Length: 432
Image 1 (cartoon, rainbow, N blue to C red):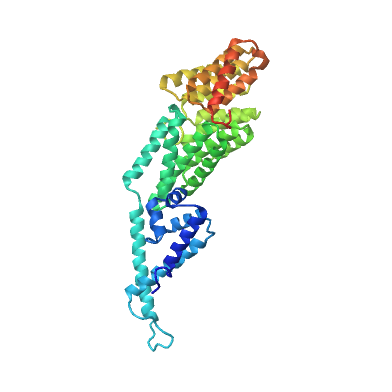
Image 2 (image 1 turned 30 degrees about the horizontal axis):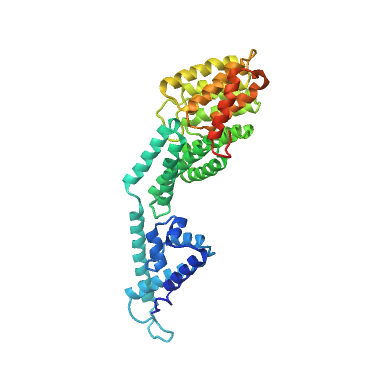
């Protein structure tokens, strides 16, 4: 037997302490850096408990050990296995000159120990699954976020979305049954989608892209068409609002093939607006016709809101205005606003539709700059302390399009003042 300090566990414990001192970490800061609980860190650092595989990987990374801690940990696990073997089969080990071949006995003993370890692993997997109530609560939180997303300030949504995502990620780090892991992976993907959507709405495109990529990975893992399609709506929106209109159209078009029926109308609408902005007029009109054939009539689902009659009118107005037919766009924008206000529609949809109305007043034979400015100002007024990049950015484009035509008009000047205030409300460095 080795003394405590000479054992593999003792060497690992000693090396952990050296690396912590070198990197300036204590148990509290190490817990924060690895996202593991402080008691787990304390037991590992004190040598009272052999760290889990996930914990040792985190410690090796945070302490810049370059795989050294992982290698030492493997030695500890082998040491534990040998000790278990000696416990199961006490007595001396076979020597080179022994007359009796003990290989069979040793192999049987190793199998007995391995079987014991297998039982332990089985119990850890069975016991590692979170309580069903925890899973239900995570699902319920997602439903609440989906229901409230379009009417709730982003500052209120942020801790709910980020906190939920972190909770699910912690659960995924542990031993789980296949069924529960699949369910949690889908939930994590939806939280990542909402986080990306939230980042996009406040103009943080870098964060939006990262969360969209993460959500896409989760969607592939579970092969869920609803999550995949939701991610595509985010990706095409990011491309559209960063001026990459052809790319936005292509993303939406590709996602429409095999898309969940719930998302087909929305994806077709997003393709139509992008085609119109890219100057691909006939393709835009065809995509717009596809929208009306794909409207979802069932119950709302998680991810994005249902694409109903009001949004059909909104996108007819958006695309028609982009194509220069403001006379056609205006009644559709007004019809959409009537429905949205009567049904308690979300502020982003209402603001976007007011901007479509503003565009309708400009893209016609007899432009009306004053009414266009009033409509764009109404779009900003809907936000009421809920700065939203899509609405602010489009109102800004309307204001720029007014240009010299609106010079000296009260409504245009007021739009410019409101626009500056709303742009300042977005996070620093964001789009708008």
